[in-house]
Image 1 (spheres, one colour):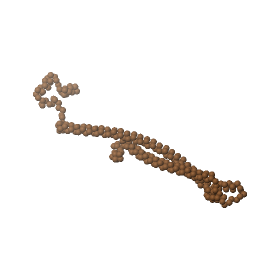
Image 2: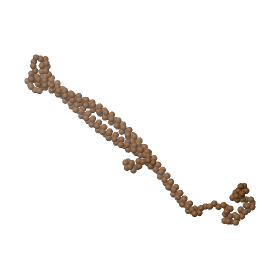
Image 3: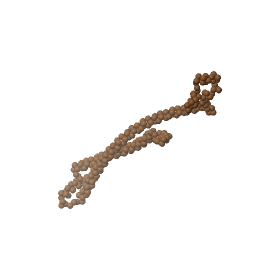
Image 4: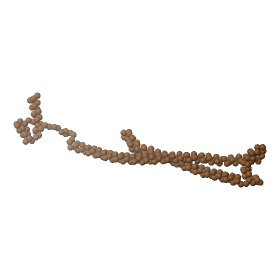
Length: 268
């Protein structure tokens, strides 16, 4: 199509753009728009797939964190239900001890806090912080998940609008192609008619030249035709023709030329 565009002139003989060129330009513009819309649609599809993958990874991560949080809650519940071992000095006693020691300290204000109670309080605070961080992280991830869902909805709406625009552009391209085909058929018919008219014109021209040559051969230019009156050409006539005017003169017949001459003399 590009070679056809280059071979065709953009301007007609009278300096105006023809309708076929307008249709061709419209077709090229529509094809460029289709390419741009296709690239845009591919970009939206890629971004949508990326966002869906991120959403899936976040959902899996949230499930993992929730399972871990549930496991830690179960472990703490099982530790709380078990009977405490007085002789053992494990980490479970240090983790379970802060609540009781803190209650004892609060209930007996007269007693001073021992170093063991201080360490147990510190450990209990660290445990609470470690428990609160996953919950906060899960809450943040849930908020991010909601935001990603909103973004995916926006991308889906944009994709639908782009798909509708793409279908509309395809219909417009089909209509322009049909119109271009009709214009090409009309131009082909006009070119055929023009060729027929040119052939007829050339044929008539050649016939006219042939007739002119024949006329020039039959009537040469040095002998021009001269009008001669019959009264002035009596010497070239035969004798039988000469007697007729004399008899006509005897019977009162007069030549129109002589009649006009006599009329002018009699009636001035």
